[in-house]
Image 1 (spheres, rainbow, N blue to C red):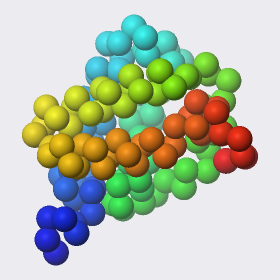
Image 2: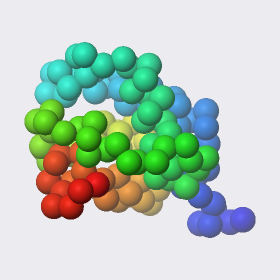
Image 3: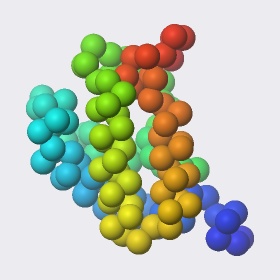
Image 4: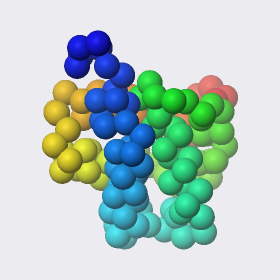
Length: 127
């Protein structure tokens, strides 16, 4: 398989790297006063685990996440498009700091963007 045909999950470094990316991203998110309140009542161990499974699924890795709960678990939390963009910004910064190619960063962000409406509640269909 060439680099271009490898799954994004593998291009980002596979299981160990994705777990490290998730850990670093949440460190930054929890340090961000604009985002940290969304996680005040959350088990961060569970959040990290769910995020890993979500990313694995979204990035063509070993998928255990169905995505069925995205709308429900984010409903009524007040998450706006601005918050979503800020969260994704932290994710992108972590990838860039790890030397991930801009093509793969863009690919990852594009895939995350497909879930924005479900997370912000802007979806006009039941998800």
